Image 1 (tube, rainbow, N blue to C red):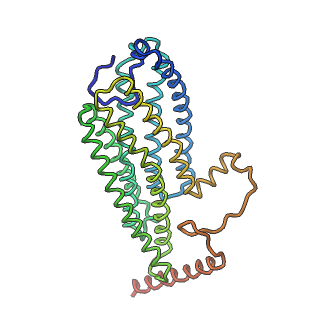
Image 2 (cartoon, one colour):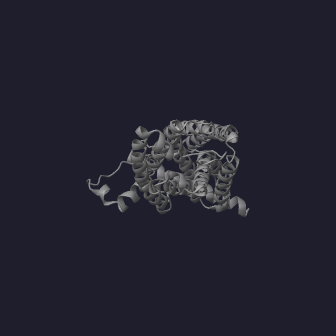
Image 3 (cartoon, helix red, strand yellow):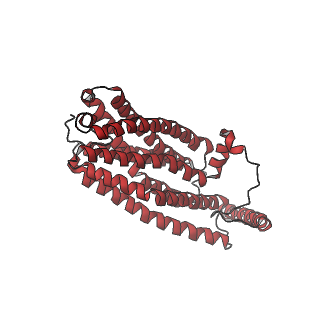
Length: 344
């Protein structure tokens, strides 16, 4: 039996069920095989969508890098848990599983949980930068923003792992992560209100905005809309993960520990297969790249999609073309006036 004070996730004592609870053991052995197959599929699923993020380039480089880091963290978690599950399947004497292997894979799992649970605050931090540098964020890439954010997310994951070496710290760590997400949701609402207000301003004839600024406002609204859908879908899953992490800090029976691990696996599987789908639904370039990469998506007869605005509503084509050229004219006149004033 593994003796440790660290928070145990994804692990249960199979030997106990083999010797003390044979009725459960048959179900658990079947589940081990099924979950291992699902994790293997999920590994390839994550590889594909990590490639998709950087191939399609739907959003700004910084936002894409943070999304890619989030998916890579999930991929690393999958590899760690897959290693643990394979060891549990291959080893005939379950008590002989290397304790260091168990601790290492669980440490990676805890790191991944910590990094994943703080992804929303860092998404919001990057969108705050996009809003603050509205005038030239698309032109000046400012790659250092995403590098600092991903390093900070990595550091929080490592800090979470370090703190949860002692399971008594679980409540403090989880409360901190929940608090960060609460602040991020408030910032999300504020950013949506501000960008919607700026969007209405330039559509009401305000000519002080350049095309670059208008593009950035539109991208902000689209990305924040996608994040909102992710939050609504992930809310139940995040709550379940937090509850499981909290319960795992107590001394549980082996049966309850298995149920906790099962609940956590279900959450992770739903994350893995739903979040990329939400991103694809909200990203035109992802859809296009998906059709190019997977021929099965091209079987239906191609149809011309109607023009849609930033919010996804259908637009009057004639009016859209007229507005576009009017916008170009206003932008050029505004830029020309600025250059004349600078010269004078």
